View (cartoon, rainbow, N blue to C red):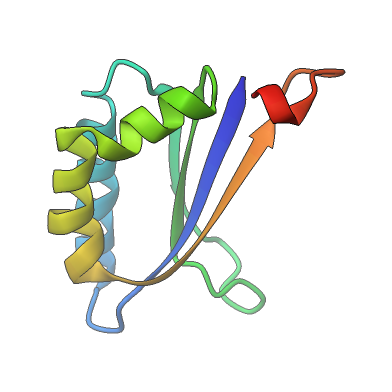
Length: 106
């Protein structure tokens, strides 16, 4: 099982109410993809030490399914309509969650 974590910095013109809309849209759109499990979306609490405005994360069965998600039309549209216009920078992390599993086979 893979945990896919994406940290995002919104563009300066994104006001708090717009961020709330972005978070709702993130939930709505990503939950339309059956391979996305345990979706989490949140906004930062500490603005002093955290440059990332919000995050989303989800579990996916393996790296092949993660690649499928990224090619899925719903995800491509999400990137184009939500992330593209409102996100300035992002960092992506993937973690294997099964103890003892060789990450080469994730």
